[in-house]
Image (tube, rainbow, N blue to C red):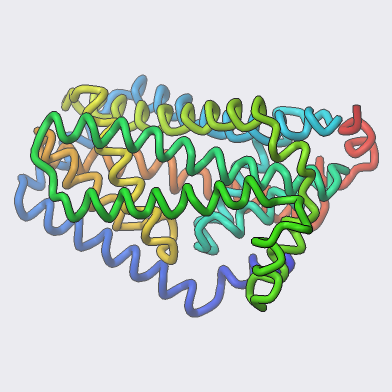
Length: 344
């Protein structure tokens, strides 16, 4: 597996810059198209009249997403006999977000950074890899549950393009099947699936890591249920952020409608794994979905841009600073005392 320092340097590669430029250009196209079909002055007015209290509420809701993600890892570490401080896992969550955006690889790069940070704190490899398996399974499990609810709401509210529904369902079924394979076979060196994967060169290093996962931790029902519950909370906090921002600009919408719009937009973003954070793609899907549920186009764009500002852009600066500390082993990720305190 490439070192995280190498991955950080990879964020500056020409190919990665092209993905950022493509995303930025697509976002610009979305803004131009929306402004063409709505009043530009209305768009600016909506942004200017956003209530500060709602922005603060959005910040608080987004802060909750990093706490919830940290709790998934803290639960796994606690089951393995380690004690992680919430502040440490919170920092790792911000750093993971930055790496996932800077080096778009479907969340793999950010997970590698999280594992490196935990190992610097003294958590052994078997526990960290068990955490990787559990977070992956719970992430896709929560997505399947939330998207299922969203599709039911959407079909009751309006006719859907069934080709889009089929594509989304196929994506979820494949993703959930892969995560189930991961859950059932991680830590089992004698597993025929693992042995077959070892014969495929690109998967060989991955199987070595999966073999090191603690099989007892990976298959603890309580851990997986709790992790899925935390992941569902993250989705709800994100959707609630978008809903609050719509209220802030004077464009109230039904919470269940906003939840549905957010879920479908998120799946579209997930399909575009090589564009940083689905830049431009998520924004277009969000505007289209919100408008289809009756939100004026200018308001849909305003709320979406505000949401992306809080969830995508604002955490980038602290994220890069924390990522550098993790990679270089500084601060909370360098002291021997921190490693000793981590062990219960």
